[in-house]
Length: 277
Figure (tube, rainbow, N blue to C red):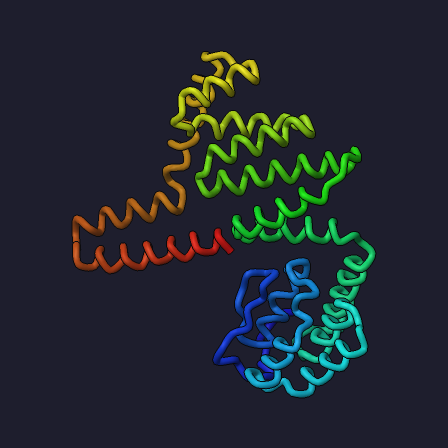
């Protein structure tokens, strides 16, 4: 899909909230744009009378709403439901419809557990960290003691650690990485735990971690030094650059800087809200 897309349906005054994706949509086209790369974030929860009512009243997709209601009455599955939206939207090319059809068919042949793991990973990619953690924890409740599940559980604990670290919850991050290492013995899990523990202010917890994993004080000091060096190397990052720019502007034009700081603070606030999903 490329070029200019003419909307076939009205834009809604009130959005529809995609519970499984933690996101509002305002049009059929926006839903299709979302489906193109995030189809794993949707599930059967979209198959509701409320969604059909929204299509009919808010975006005036009367015929599509009627078709979807009939599919639900006939107890058709999620794949057929989604394909009806894809085909009636007028948004996708023939090749794109075939590609999405193949994705949906693949989802049909994968277990619910596999699909939910991919969904959680996609939430992570979108920085919806709390939503991803919630999904990961739910998956862990249904894990078995089979070798394959133990390996996947190790990956899940590692990803949860990364989610917590990205939210600066380093104590929880360390615990998750340790659990991941215990299950799958991945070296990168222990390395990530070692990096996260450098940010802890609890000296007793740090010492316990070092003893448990046979890390000497010299090695720990070296790790902290390396992290400090990384911090200096990333001082020219986009976020740090914004702060420097605002500081310089404040010296030249305090009034303008106040407005820019307000805008930037709101942007960071929206980013934080997105973490929570």
